Length: 309
Ligand SMILES: C[S@@+](CC[C@H](N)C(=O)[O-])C[C@H]1O[C@@H](n2cnc3c(N)ncnc32)[C@H](O)[C@@H]1O
Image (tube, rainbow, N blue to C red; front, side, top):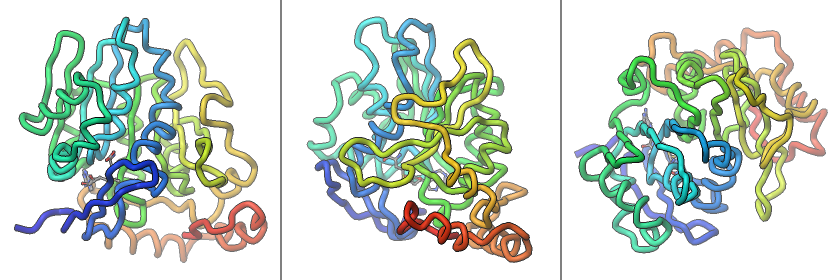
């Protein structure tokens, strides 16, 4: 039987946590710093969960659940006492990563018994339901399953963890990111490891305010380790700088004016990766934006080793 991710092979990351490599996407699920370390630094810390302790509901959408690290780390970090009621939705194409992860004792040992039970239930029945929390995992292409969420449901947090834009452009298109932005509640935050100019441009055009995620302590020093995109409004405006984020610097703003910022487009929501990549290359060739390599030369003291597309 052919699987959408092809063969999956296990990898051990720097913090000892299990990750996987997908043969079809030719990419690892996590950066080498560690699956758990990445979940904590890029998703849990900038979510500022303490904001929800006294609030009645925390609504989370996990896009590309995979082995479940991001949501499990988030749930593990919620206070045991006075935790908010949790409404959780997950979108994922392939059930194997979560199943495989749950077969590893080292993975199971990371989570509290409550969190582990929820992961088990998602794996077995696609959902869990408790007095204070409920979760449902929708299997399939996230472009379609996103439309199956309850019509008016909105998220306080969207954890966006698709494979890289070059490998999985269908989940980084202007249209899909726009649809995710519509699902954010006022004051809600979309968190992603991506610092790509194309992705940041689409999120900004979708009306979100951008911040740059900073490398966690111990992580290789890079100019950014991801993006926080927040829907404006609400009683507590997003601070310029906060735990793990700061404003985009001049270099990052100028990145958004280069050819790298040409977005991925998927007008009907069902093109394959190759069609989306070709459409973008044609738009890049025709556009009058500054070349990304010129921008890189201007900032070479800070951008060594970054992608230029
Ligand atoms: C980088 S991994 C996610 C890692 C995950 N967040 C974790 O903590 O383990 C990307 C995931 O995207 C899923 N995926 C790929 N294409 C998809 C699609 N079109 N719709 C939904 N999920 C997709 C893959 O099956 C894979 O699990």
